[in-house]
Image: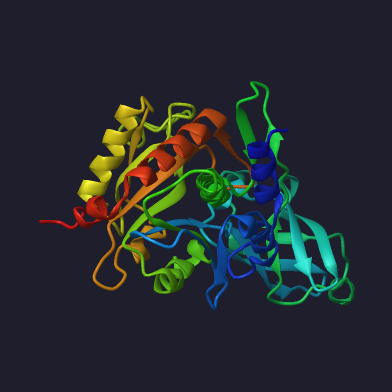
Length: 355
């Protein structure tokens, strides 16, 4: 396993739903500590500063993942849960989860009424989250409590990192957005051995999946002159998706966001990314997202405004227990990111302000 695979494995297998990022934060801190000066905002986002002159360039990727919270325990020992982040009900049933308790991790499975006991017409309906439960094998509320479960305990998907058959595709949970955090770490690694005309702030944010909260507080800590958000993007190359819905393909290169529900990127910075990709012969895909947003939604509105773009690694099946990325997309995204960072000197950043 090479260093990038090892990095992605450690990050994706770590647990860290919104508001409960302690475990993944410790791993990120260990990777960042040799690469710069570490700070932390008061809700848990990590900031690694590398350099001490030139424009302040913020690289942001969120370390939280979609998950759940225990909010009720039935008398028969089943756990009712709330979603932390966006979940489509249909991807939940039968999936294994881990409940993070004060006594340690407990394994469970998401269940609902068995199909054998459901009338035929009802079987055609999607089971909603409110009708699901988590089964830890208990038979009473007392047994659940004795096992250590408390209301408010976080619940994470149970999924291991895997290298797939072709050797280039990786499968695992939480690529949204541990892949962005990995890119930040690898960029900091690169510039630990190379010069850059700016001060880089590598930021692993918290609670993006519940309203981009860490982006707001960490932007206050950094006060950036320019920002690049590192994310996962939604692949449209699976059956049933029309090209006009999403043309993003696995293995076809990183993507650049042209529009989302809460941000239009800085046009000059967007063009700089496009021109840098062309000059370095890096294939670049283009994405629009009408139903969501990224940390850029908060950061680009910081104070009087921050020129911001979103650069992503395409992923299939995000916001589920298992997603898939392609190593070529990751490597090309890293190459493009470092090439852009090398161009962000004071004159270039000053010129990003709209005329």
